[in-house]
Length: 142
Image 1: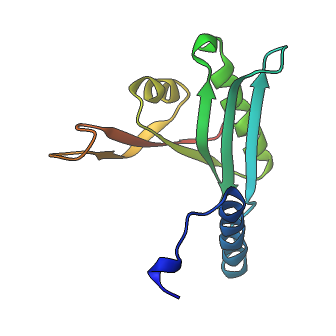
Image 2: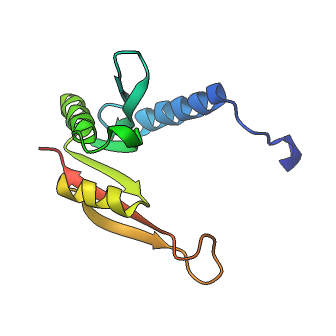
């Protein structure tokens, strides 16, 4: 096998890779429940207006993606999705949650929900995009 044998993974490859890693970790150390949490909010016509993708492991909920359609923002949908994800994560014995964001408004939203910054990455010098920053945040699940 050589570097030339490396190829882009398909979505099913990606899922298999994650499943294999989680199975390996389960054999080596206790970690609670490894579950996917995927939530969607749809309009009466069936169109997607908001959603959250996350996963649990080691007693933590990782919020991977939270999205609300621009014309649906400021209606409480993001807050409702986080609350439901917390409820599901708590049922899976999670005590805490974490996420990352590079959006200043999203950071403020998460801070209003009780998240706080525990780390950050920032581009410097000639890194693209200049001045880009990413915040890592966590909170205790109420």
